[in-house]
Image (cartoon, rainbow, N blue to C red; front, side):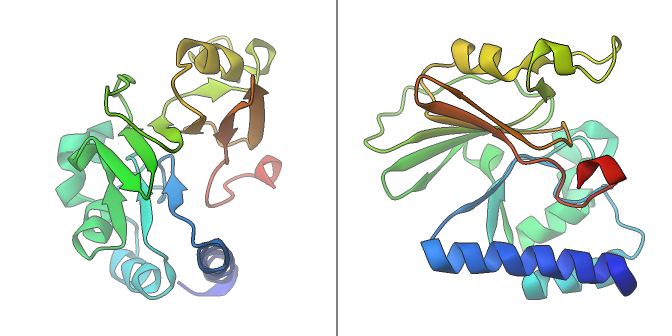
Length: 193
């Protein structure tokens, strides 16, 4: 990809890679790592991601899954990234461990069902569902979802819940536990700056 979009993507990937290296971090994705199941210039896009993308652990979002279905992942850009080892789909194993931390993933359309696995570190949930900062922040009367505090209240077993689907960035805290909605990887509108 050339031009401003390509530069924007490479800068964001560079930022992720630097954070990963500096903090020995696992980079998580709440879905929609790509905007369409099959990118227009898919081969060029995949070559760029393969070159610059740090390994990412996450879930499938509605934009990155063909027909919004996880069983179509083999026919998507996300499926290719998984096959070349750049993306770990948590749904494949049901969970992912990073040292003492347990990360559970629920792709688009999947209900959160906390596991009974013992964990001595942090319990992290990665989910792709519509979450609003508060009930007053709903996008419209026709958009269903849940507020950040309601989701934190519903799942007290998680120290961190990372969400995707809402392209706005926000963080909410409840009793020392956090919900982080990082927003879209690629800015699609001026309001997502």
